[in-house]
Length: 523
Image (cartoon, rainbow, N blue to C red; front, side, top):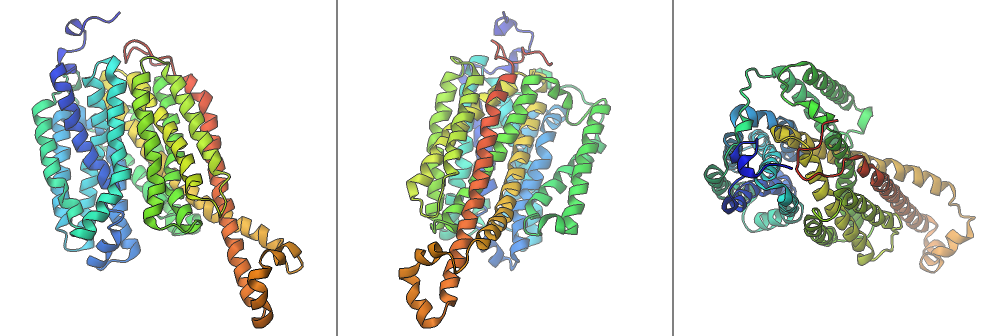
């Protein structure tokens, strides 16, 4: 049995006094929600930014890409930076960097200046999410960590749901510059609360004597090139482009050299030995594949609604937001059940429910109605909440508190990379598979197919007889193209369902949760 908190071998300041733990939660969550909002709030203002700064479409897209790339680079460095500078000091610095760069981004006179400050925003914001997770896991006692992660998960929901709506409202009623200015008062309040309530546990101060500059260099090259490759690949026709091939070689080579460097240096910037912990390693793999699947649906559902079903952007957004209702309910449920049920069962059930919802999407057709699109999203939302809260708590709870910062940074990096890879691959599959299906369908469509003629006889025969066959063939080709695209979407949905179903038994490779986080042996 573990000793009482006052007599624990860990320093007494590693858990905050009960009166302060929720104030600490509010402080770190305020900063993190601000950062998550900024990953999506600029999307809807992109056309306004482009017009205001006289930029092209590809140039303006760097407003989004630069932030994501900077985020991806700094996330895995969070644990090392927290140990080197002190977590409280580094968290406060990250918030102030985010606030200052937000202010300057809003005042930017041209696009290059805006991109520079978006990079600084990404560097400041990227560290907030893993640090907030680590601080909450340390602040709350073991039996309340699942509740803390549930609160954290609910806060993270605000980004995808509220970001586009808030950004659209601010842009319509004020100016795109205010999507950055709004961060200033929120960030200053968050920084003040962090300075007041958050304290560093003694075990974080490890006295790092040297900086692994080579590891940082390889990480920046590898992750940066991979993120840019994923962002630009579809527009540049992937490996037909010399730039994409170069970025791929640099990205894969940089990541490989980073891994080699981290294992051979005595003071690594990211301690990859944390992956020796089986529960954490398996949880990291699961979260990568789940983010591959979930982020893909976040992109594909709005595309399907607008491209196939003919919905407006607002209605398509409403379809996607319904998924959040399921996520909200399951996050609350997962937080309450974590200490009553083996968390591995919750993850497995979440995978089954998410897989079932996605399998329902594999039966979509061009005439599908609103609720038959939306209801599978509720299943996916319920599944995601049952997966992420127990999975995050299990994975990070299996790591010693001294390695919590490194583990949280690595965990969030693979989440980001999994989502980026998922979006890129699944969107590319829609493009290529639609061409394959179109070729197949067109080979079976001829004027001698009576079913094809009979399908549109009443609507098109008058035009065929009076104006020739061109209008009729045009109508048939448009419908053929639409059917081929639907089949390509279905291929993606079926693949995602297979991923969820395949992950169901994998969750049981993780060790059964023990009475105290960090007590699971690292093997």
